Length: 371
Ligand SMILES: C[S@@+](CC[C@H](N)C(=O)[O-])C[C@H]1O[C@@H](n2cnc3c(N)ncnc32)[C@H](O)[C@@H]1O
Image 1: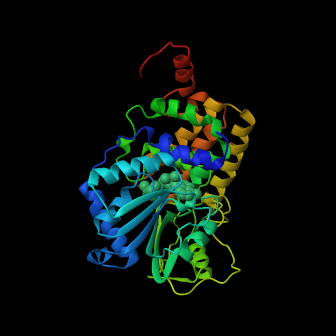
Image 2: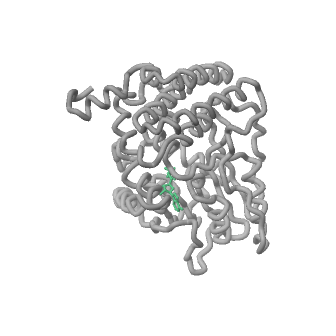
Image 3: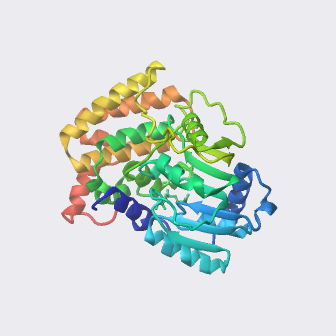
């Protein structure tokens, strides 16, 4: 696929949701959870959304836009992917919503809203995938009324999820995407349900974390500085997080209020991902970084798509297996053992369950059918 933008649109349009079953009826639990979530981060009671002009951005297949419309808001939703806009139109039709419209737009470019301003802007779990979240925020905030609010849900860097993702992203090439999709069924023949953590461990997440061209996991500090430059202040204080490297994943969620228009010249802070390897303590994390660098060099030198993809799926298995615990030292010991084994040159070591390379070759030569 030619460029990053096209690949992102494909990944989130057709590609990524290849495994998921499309159901237009949103589960009641999803609707309830997100109504409460919007109310919390915009700091507005659910009944006060009625009539608010809301811009829902990076809307994917339109689920959060529907939740906002069900709250009674007048919603404009945007996404880069034409496939997602098509899916969104279907879900809108299913719900018979009149207070919802979808527009295909690359939010790296300024909005064309012809003087339309919003009370609320929502960006749920997508901004980290923009080439520059800072540029997108610079495009969004001018569309917010003074006193209006923006809600951001982002990926927080520094957790185990993004440590293993950085390893995988340093060895995977975009061309391995189809191969990886073929290999998934060997590594996880029963899917990912066995890990009993469906919110964090699921099929699309592998491709999202490992392949999407931009994955800018960040910190509260960076986001607050960025929004301050744009004339916005936090609605509630950020949680003071410490020693999070043992956690599998934590979302970064915040609401901001626009107090004034930004100055012409602003500093940009949220332009790249946290470097997960730039750590100086504790010792076990520093050791993991050393093993990670060695393993990255090993796989890049090998230039073997099957082994590299299998290795990355093994990394995901390790994350999935430990996702319910937060014992940082134990996780990193396991990771180091896995990295050491993987660098030993043994195909067998790549997956604790299957010799995936042999299975893959056998399947290619039609020697086996279904696993
Ligand atoms: C991980 S999905 C999240 C979708 C939805 N917000 C959700 O939480 O289910 C990321 C979405 O961001 C969209 N996206 C990525 N870059 C974009 C851009 N530059 N402009 C608009 N949308 C973009 C993708 O097309 C995709 O639908």
